[in-house]
Each structure stands twice: as C-alpha cells, then as structure tokens.
Length: 229
Ligand SMILES: *Cc1c(COP(=O)(O)O)cnc(C)c1O
Image (cartoon, rainbow, N blue to C red; front, side):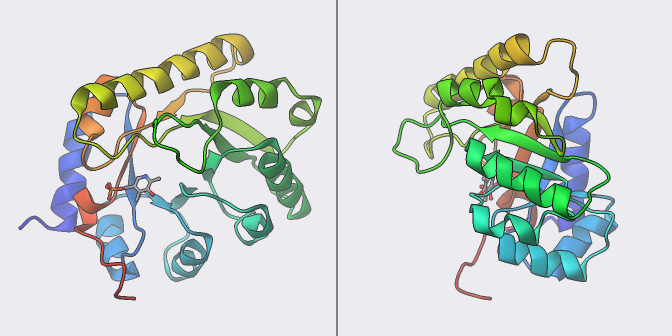
C-alpha cells in the first residue's frame, strides 16, 4: 500500500509541467494524516465544513493555505474570515457580500480569494450558480464596491458517474463558462485564472479538459469513514 507521502509525490510528478495544482482534501481525516502530507512538502489543503476546518487549522502549522470547498452559510463566514486563503464555493452575491464585510471587519491585509461555484451536474444539486447568475453577480454595483474580495476563477462538481463522455461534457461546459466570464469581465486581469474541477475518480479527465486545480481526497488519504470521529 502506498503511503500518504508517496501519494503526494505521485501527484507532484503527474502535475509537474502542467498549469494544474493539487488541493489535498482532508475532510474526515485526522490531523496526524494531514501532517504526513505536510511533511512531504504539501501546503494546499481543502475542507468542506467550517467547524472541521477551524478545529484542524488550530492544530496545524499556519503556513498552510486553506481552501473551503463545501457550501458556506453566511452565518459561518465570521469563523474563517481572518485566515481563509480561498473560498471555492461562492454561490451567491449575498454570501460574497458577507465575506467582504467580515474580511473588512478583521482588517485583512490581503483579499479573500473567491471562486464562483457553477452548477455543472445535471442532477438537482443544491448548490452552485448557473452561468447567468454568475454574470449578474459580476455585473452588480455591489460586487464592484467590494475591496476585500479577489475573484480567482470558477469551481464545479461533476455528476457522480462513471460515464466518461458525460463527465467530459460537464468539464468542457465549466471551461467554456470560465472563458466567457474571463473575456467579459477580466480582460487584462490575470487574477481570474482558475478552473477547479476533478476529484479522485476523474481528475485525469479534468486535467485533459483544462483543470488548473484538482481536489483529491481519498486518492491521497484513503477511503473516508464518516462514522469514526
Ligand atoms: C470530498 C470532496 C472532494 C474530494 O473527493 P474524493 O473523491 O475523495 O477525491 C472534492 N471536492 C469536493 C467539493 C468535495 O466535497
């Protein structure tokens, strides 16, 4: 069986000479396991729940860049506003406004990186905006007046399926959304450059379709056990 360090090394090698980075997804895994990845040199980690993120962050070195990848309720923004590197799961203008407000309140010296979560799966998923909503957000006066936000790209969660052609279509769709938003709202603004797509089962396909950030959990840390705490 490969160790966590082996897995980190494997992804380092596979992503070398690509524009793609690895977000190591640590949900349900204890800090000891996260430290194995850290000791192998990894510094970019993702969690999908605020409470778990805050608890782990306190016990781990502070040069980790934390990405929130799960749905964020506005009333929880205050717990992460001081330290979060990137919120990948921005799905409304209201949420973005709260992130901006809380970041200002804690006097952040660098903006919160935010990615617009676009719904790309055809199943009725609860979260994510459609393309038109993302356009409306970026067009709004409210967004233009947010000084503690930097929009760095888009994120999508594909359908949970083995159907490669379907996955490819969804990744292509996200990429096309990214390109249209970039060409409309971020001309000559290099901050907008990320397409976060691909997980353990489909990251190679996502990479082929232009992913700049894959989010891999079980492929690094092993299967999740949601019962054990
Ligand atoms: C859990 C999770 C992942 C990682 O899933 P794996 O299949 O374990 O790689 C990626 N993205 C999001 C949003 C997740 O919640």
